[in-house]
Length: 235
Image 1: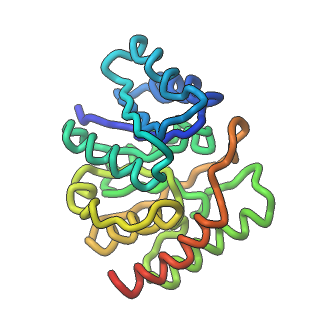
Image 2 (image 1 turned 30 degrees about the vertical axis):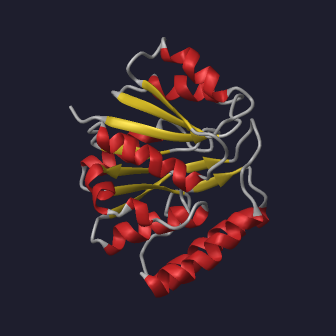
């Protein structure tokens, strides 16, 4: 049976963490869960530790000192997972903008031949709920921009809900990933595509967070805009 690990970076997710752990680990699949916490002052990591006895062997925690960024959190998680011989590795948010049950659909896409399955808001069948119209337009056209500049066929280039086969993350030079926010998500897809891996988009319904505070900022959007140009002309 393949070993599957869901990686969730956290910073101040105390309102969501217990419910998310329960939702992921109650799915009808042998999923393990790794929380990478960036020193959350609200006690997120402590809540995870308290739940580890309930989910012994399936719930793992890496604690980092300070807010070090989404990209480095995932790369830390990827390296940990590869060392533990996991076969499928997932990226997922903690705020329920990604539905836990859709993990099974991403896994199924990889089992059917995808090397990287992307939970997509903007492919046929994908939807976005609870975002202001302006935010939807900004996100959608950010993906259009990245697709046009980089010349690769992914409709939701900034998507953060994904399933990788381990060979993808073994092949991508993780220590050379340059970006941290939305640009990190674009760069990982672009590198996988350039290396010849099969990318498949799976339509999802994305719902903006109800609990907690969004980590989005203009700095993250700026990094993505400029980062796409750097990827195009230096990769």
